[in-house]
Length: 169
Image (cartoon, rainbow, N blue to C red; front, side, top):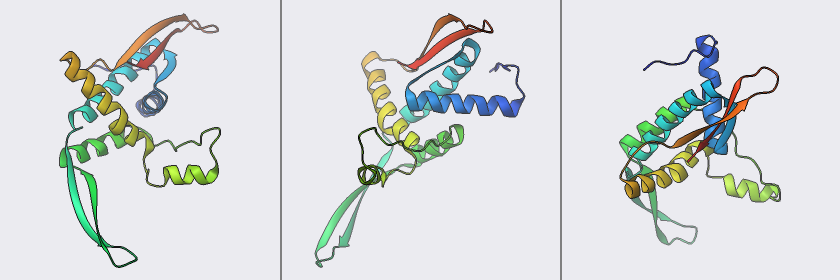
């Protein structure tokens, strides 16, 4: 498929698109130029489709451990299946890994407790929020794709570039 060059060398273009796709998936909407928005939309749709296709590929594993008091405790863990693990690694190569941010009224201790098990917050958000949301939407509407919306905002003041708002539907 043809790709817009965006008047940038390949490495800079790839970094720009990767950064904007990451921002879109993290914040759910961004404002950029129309040409960039169309490219970001294409990449974000592909990433979300990867997650949606593998949303049900999980394995449940029950492990028996001994606690401090000597009692045997069964712990159920949910692991990624082969296809979901491959999709997770592919998505990790396509986006940056932004750090989790602390909420305005959250203490440092509460923040550490909330994020102690999250190593890749954006990847977890893609699989635990977006994949579930859009797989349900796909089942309800009997369709797939169309996860982003590009709205034209008009010419940017200063250089006159056509601006657009891109958001997750």
